Image 1 (cartoon, rainbow, N blue to C red):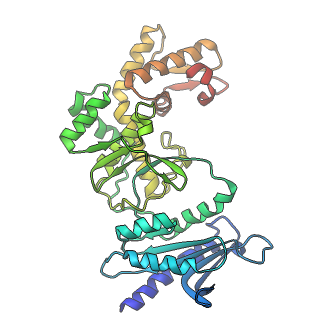
Image 2 (image 1 turned 135 degrees about the vertical axis):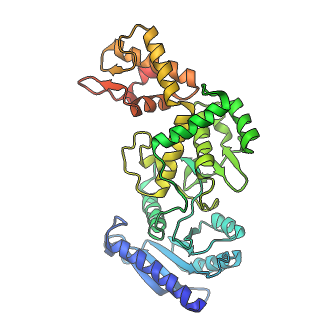
Image 3 (image 1 turned 30 degrees about the vertical axis):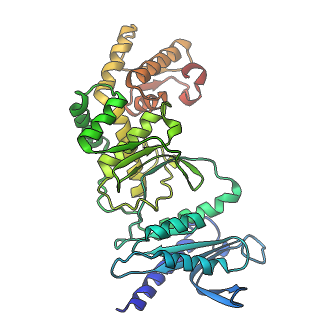
Length: 397
């Protein structure tokens, strides 16, 4: 099969995936509002004729006489794995920029990868890039973001962006092991035993140990960027074996958990097939990874759940946590120190509060993580009226 036919096949597959997914309602809007075309032309004033694009998606509001958003998609296929050069990205942007009207969104997809110059150019020009490798794996970067609320005007664009990435991949990442909680606990236990004989962590000592034993580097000196409007808190860059955390978070209570999360990526995910430039978002705020309340639907969710679990197991190891919790509550004269009973009575709220505060200081981790750990281990029992511990700020914080 020649390169033209291979390119056409890649384009046809991409077109069918998008069209079928929209017809099946996966986009979440009516099919009549999202029209998909292949090889359709759009007028260029500079050329005074139409420019043909591989695939396009028109978003039509109800009763409108023109689309409000236009996604122009170019497909780049490679049989030898050659990276898409920056010139191709620039040329595509020039063509897309000539299309009249507002709301034009350029998208490039490839079954290979993009040169670093193309990635930089695309980022600065707001071009969406999607890589699909030989196994149709979407490549992601191990970013951790602080999610923000999306305004109504932003919602449709973000929805379609996520839709395209999910549609054009199988959400499988080569080499990912679906580790259970117990397996991650064992990994962190072995690490802690080697590091400090299984005791609460001193962060400075931990960092020095990881530098010395694993050649892992750390950089907390930079203000990190934002990804799709979400503040970037930290990330692990596998290419230079370095963990970055935003400098504003140093000495803040959330710093240990974020650090542990990125260390988790290093130990659990450094050998995965991951592109460090193309990750947009894992949308981990949509899931409760601590309690496993939502089903982990794809490999990206699994990666973030594992990193969160690693961080908790590292800073709050189960056996050590139980020991300190029981000893503290036993010294307070509580008859069943291994259990916490919480209702609206002041004494029970105070005991809960005292336990959270003690454990947070003992393990050097936020009260939020301690509360999740308690819930996860099933040692918290509620009274007849369940108390939402998130609203106990007057008692807890």
